[in-house]
Length: 390
Image 1: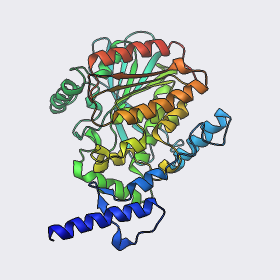
Image 2: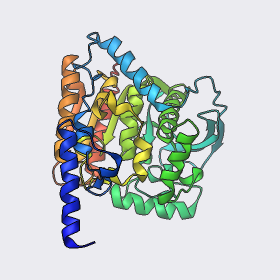
Image 3: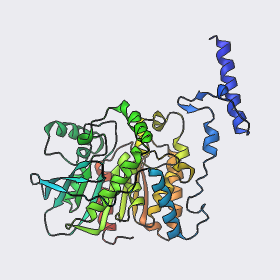
Image 4: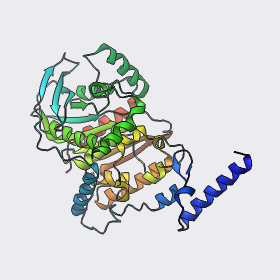
């Protein structure tokens, strides 16, 4: 292709995109992909997203009725049936005692499809205790899942990988062990593809997700259902005070935390570190989401026609929620975080509960969950779980 032809083609494509924005039609032969994997007409698609079911935009004015309608809409797009009737049938194997807490492996059925091995930490002392459902990140690292957050006592190879992960993102700490030492029961499971349920290769994620879709199901929907079931299992343990269960996660785990709070009334509070944005602001050239692959774990097809990410998180209002992020986080542009925080703030304010929502940016940090951030989370949990709000 000559330089003249290349310039002409680009000018034609831009013109086609402009025609779409002006309300014109473009034939299949004229369509093109621009800005990497984005279609040339992506601005028109973004403009069409008005999130009509969002609180304040929806015609539903009663907040309780809105919550039920919004949750039902999310659940409809999960594509995975509710597994509530499936017995957990837990099998518990005790591990070595930790520093102030007991360790155990728990194998249970979160869905009818397979058994999942989790780790369970229980503080020494007399319960029932407050509890944390701890949700691991993605990070394109599949040999470890739950081990990213709870120090593995059962596999030296995984321990080496887990310690390197903790050193990179968590100031060398295992967040689950820290919580258990502070008096929290901790439950952490692998999502499909990680550790005992993998390891998946990075470039297999799209195939895995498309196979779920071909089977009338959803990878992201499965993860959402499993996380909600994990919260219910944790709240039902005799050692746990069911009124004081929190969901906590970093990165993809942060997404899982606010999503679980939206879908489960067993979660009294949630902490999301490093995952909140407006959808439109995230869908820009260069953003990691545009690569596909890992985004399939957080993609519910068609849901964006109804609700934005902060709209889904707002289903949990007015329960206490803490959102932390790094001002230098390359995954979440500042304008996207700002849009999301403004939406969240407006919802909690409408419930006269703005004091139960904490939105915090650490300006000099990137995509990490450092020891000072962890200490803020621990202190916040100690405060809000003394008086949980439903």
